[in-house]
Length: 136
Length: 299
Image (cartoon, rainbow over all chains, first blue to last red; front, side):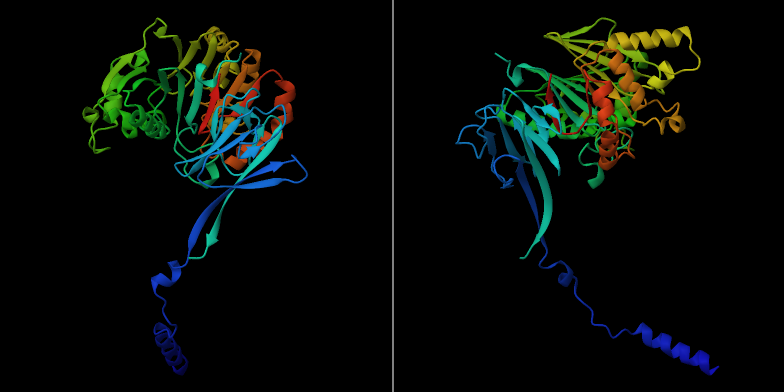
């Protein structure tokens, strides 16, 4: 009987936890997720170049006025653009001579997903996207 | 001089998933929306099926309408009326605009039921808004025996009986460029049938003739060879057979469509990597790819 009584006592105590309760705000404050997207130009120049994308349009082409200038003959003067629309990135061909390819398919326009490989006049460009935490 | 992209027929995939929508991270690349494909040539908008993918098309068209103020003239062709091909229609914003003219076409074998099926899915028990609340000018009509001419776009069709309830395939001829939309058909029952009947032979020849030398074939390839035996009779085709038939018919570009709900992006990418060299060596003259939501091609 003693044994049973001791166990009951223990159970009663456990119902009254002494752990400090946290408010719901503690779990949500300070968390902000930022979407981060980049284009990585592979094998063009000495090192791979990484361009972080924002919400502004990026033109890819041969002429120096382009945000991404690929000065080779296979690339049209203004070859393609990357746009941000409805919270997604798209690549769009600008009537280029050699076309714009995504993962080997010649496209006019295509929504971009993580690890998509864009090909502009033989130059490979990798699209990457991830979410990072940022402090508030 | 090469014609600009705008002077070519533009094909956009708005929904590529078969059977049921599959939202979520593991399907975001090839898409989770059910079938909807558009072929746009200048001012002529043709839409194939109204799966959930048509919702995003509607958003796009409304943006365009708001910019230009020009009313929308649309032609919607149904392959058939299974849920995954009609369920997006109540969410297609242009139907709630007076300036929209929408002509809906479907199989004559549904007799007068096409309108009642579409209305039926908007009965109050299923949806709070009835089809009578569509503001657009809507015409529902059966396709006739004759080919349809929409300006320079010529549309032909054939019935497909190897799908529960049947379906229709469409072929567009636009200034010599040919595009076929042929989903929801079990080619295995036609081409690999043990009952090698006269009827099957005729159906196989009809299919080969219909897709012969087309510039783009958008076709049902829901199952792998391994999966197909347990799905026999469900009305969908195996990928390998589709590849063989399309190649035999000298198809130039093949978009494998109506992805199985269980096929994640990773699954499709791995399947592609396993077969990539075979696709390139065995089907040299044919471009093969998985249809992908959010992708536009010029034909």
